[in-house]
Picture (cartoon, one colour):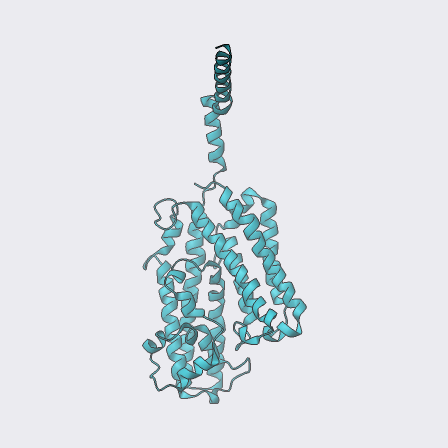
Length: 364
């Protein structure tokens, strides 16, 4: 009996002590809540700028450039001169820039509507492309739209406009190739328009799903979910550039695995992929707004400064690879490896530092 009473009394005292220490006074609780609230980051401005100032702005530019490319291709069809061929080649490269930068956010409609593979499947198969040219099918836009992804899009257009990096002679382009070229470019333009409208207010307005995260968005129940989507988009393209686009042809010493191999535009493509990461992080495309850098710098200024330097170093390291990339995978392996290492560092910081920071932080 005495032991029981002592044990019961001890438990009561311990519970009372735990309650006093753990719960504290109402005043202390209020102060704790105020502290938590002060630490929360309101990402509404950042998410709105990302959706409209970066993503929609990029897709709008892409759609405009695709329109310019279609105009140039039709001009080439009407007058197959060397000057018109060069204008069409330049228009193709100009269209690549916003597309490659947009690969830092390959989520949402570009993924769910299958627009990424329809626009940019690679590497293309010469045999498959030639089979289309050799067929008796009328190469209408509808017919091309039904082809395999590797038989349409950017790299089919590239194959028809360029030849192994050499300056193609306009006089060598056949009527059949022109027919294919115009139709697949019209198909590409339809896809870029679909992508722009998927994000635009006058279309499906996916921008609002991102901008309104945590306040009624059916896609992102919290701001944190949307911010994590942004970071994961950057991780995905960093991984693809380091461990796919550059590493695959480098490790295999296989030029057929090189993206944009016909135009010798590979290095520009890779740099634009990393510039896309830079755009998302800084919240900047045609104009400068709040970006992830504002969030990271508010939590860890050193991390922000380091990551910005790493991103620029990766862009510079890719640019240090001698053109054409397809030759450098065997002739300049040190420069290629340095670029792989620099992009891998960007990926590692995103995965090990920035994503965990987002996941552990509170948002409004």
